[in-house]
Image (cartoon, rainbow, N blue to C red):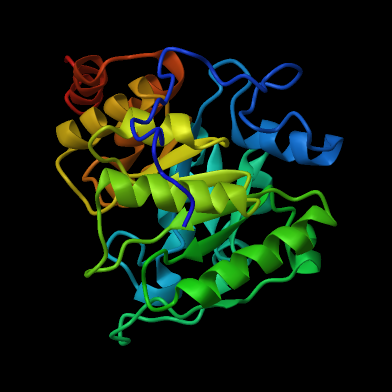
Length: 297
């Protein structure tokens, strides 16, 4: 073993120093990408704020008729004006969403599958969508679930690698999704490891979760991070989560259940947008939400 004397142990994330390879295009880590990649990314991330509001409604691919998503054809179209990206399965999009309603919104196409709520282990998935299908769906990125530290780590990283190789040929970005199973870590160390692995393997965007020292996770990841809202929590708490991660450097949130399971999903999605794109605080966004659901007579 090499002599470890003098080894630098303390980590320096240069939290006060902006990402350096950012001349020429506003999306983090995208300078060397081709025109087509950048065009797709520009539909995902707003050019003014640099951020995105994603709406994930792909839960049915393993959860079936999720609470709040029993009727995609009714619930989702109402929310489209307030979001930038629809994250969904090809079936959910084709069957339920009129393409005329989508306009210039981004599409994040779920491209892995193979699990269900009936399984004890959700970590073994396959790559279920090929590049030609992604092109036909006009996808702006394909979403690949990954299980770092889980039983399905090898197969999910193989799925990610295959997806990156495939998508590069068609100039389609890849969204690497950090999965967290019941027995998996949810620590800063884990999220630093997982997000960096996905980026190093070629993911152009990483979706992950909030954690302690989240600003270090963001700084160490060379591509944009979008934060998942996770399970439904009170609206005030969800807006605080959105504010916290955006203020620590995340480039967006994916508030699926915290929007469509809200009693007032349209107003909630508008409040999230206030934080992500307009710089509102959590308090300001919650006040906006309250005013929207209880208008002055």
